[in-house]
Length: 487
Image (cartoon, rainbow, N blue to C red; front, top):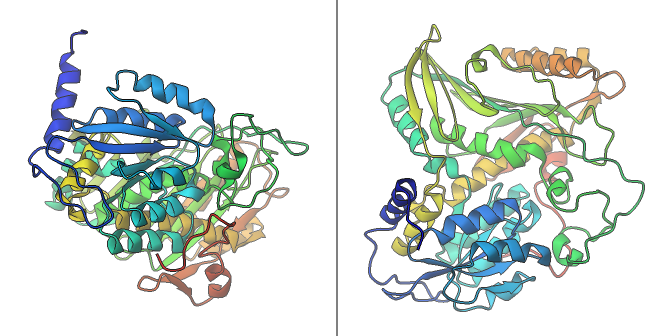
């Protein structure tokens, strides 16, 4: 037997601590399996590419957990996942159709790393079947879906964790406690930055072949069953509105989530406006690759910038943060804090380091979910589905502002942004970014999104543009993959 390293021993000890202290037997509501003191928690992982494999690793290392089933509509991904479970004491089931998992009475929970357009439906189905759920970000594909996920979790007494693991990062948790003690004074403004390195997804000249290993009907699920018009069936679904939410939903949701967490905002913002477009690439993608959005929270507004073209225009206060591809910068009365997954650093007003918080990237997020399954208390979750819904809603708000907007020349957008010093500054940086990447906004104009007001209680748009925006709160489902009207 291989000797366990100190790092591995410490990691397993932390995971064990996260699930320690639970009752010997854990009571389950009607429809759920009762797990005895000596039985493993049985989970199924659905969606087995990069993130799904990471989650297989996370959950198989949690003490008292067994990955009992794997699910993917593309069977080529079973072998890599099974290889990770090679030392499993019992046979691991493999299924292509997620609905088969719902009928398995021996499964306690499902872990979802499927494409965005599947998340809500699978979560609601699982809750109704008596399963707990760990669902990747963004938890929903529309505003209405997210609220239905919360309703299903509460109605059926399920434990539903959002995969926004930054909330479990030890460094960020320590930093938040320190900031709330007032060391830098009141928060004034938060800026979020997501600068992933992206490339064109290419342009097709007609329908593309689907791999023989994939059931394309199941892949599309609730989305329209249309011919494939991208070279890469899998990851590039992010950049199409029917299945993905662009980088607002892919990376931005993490940023939105830990910003909301730090400023203590439980609700959606009262007003949102976005300036965005897809530039530099003549490809099949639909979602923006450059975007600036103002979430007009009070008293602490949030400004988010996303740049994906090769030459970035990084703000000065990010220059000292080496290797930080995306972050939040919280500007306070007495300095600022810059953080991301893995921790962060506090600076005084002169830019001198005050304190550094080193974290672990939220490695015990899976164990936190299992501990909450035992306690049956949603309050024990680091990222309850309600938090996941609201943070995902910010992705949808940014995109709905963009989708209800109109192409406009830079001077007109600059004039519109001039009513907000914050938006004006970010718009200037956006133009510099496009200029650095030799983008002619005269030929490919920016889209000036509608400034949308949202009622936090009803989660419906009000005021100017409300009719257009409310039409995008939900989507049409393809039978039989239909969200029930009443969860």
